[in-house]
Image (cartoon, rainbow, N blue to C red):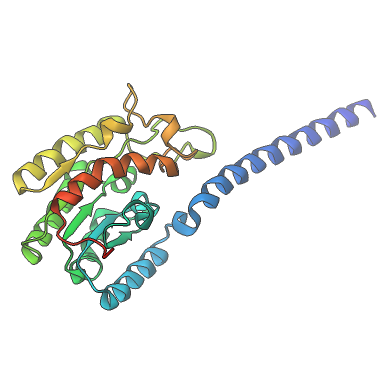
Length: 253
């Protein structure tokens, strides 16, 4: 009887432990999802659907203004709030990679004939094991296509942002194959590419990174990848003066 009771107690404790882990996981996801909603759904069909929606929106849009092309960091960026003085178009897709951005470049960006293009991408590629050299090649092709199709449109390229490469617990697999070394290497090559291509490079990495090269905890959500809403005010403070100096059109007052 005593042995049975001990086994039963162990079973109850195990169930409680599992329940606690599930509750923590659901709570963490709930915090993230509650802030940014379905932007966290990154399956290929969802990404294709979003690209198609953007294409239809581009057909009906007035065009011009500032187009932000990127991944989840862009999709989660409330551009209307941060740039009320500009016509802004958000063309970010959560989980997107540079090869897919290149595929949707014509319908999602070029079709708008923008005054300025702001680009951010590459981290998801590296997380999924794509070589840094391939990422830089894809971004080079994006820049080249934009310069060919929109020769009078200035291009702003943001550096890759730092992430928490030491995530643990339920988010231990989030960094994937991304490391501080790979992200830094990509940014060095990306800055050189921008200099050679005559486009504006903006270093966001150093603004958010700690001494180890990981993103500072106060700026990132529990997943170690995505910015907390207030962190975007730092992004805006860095980008807005550059955009203002390049953009020829503002919202009518």
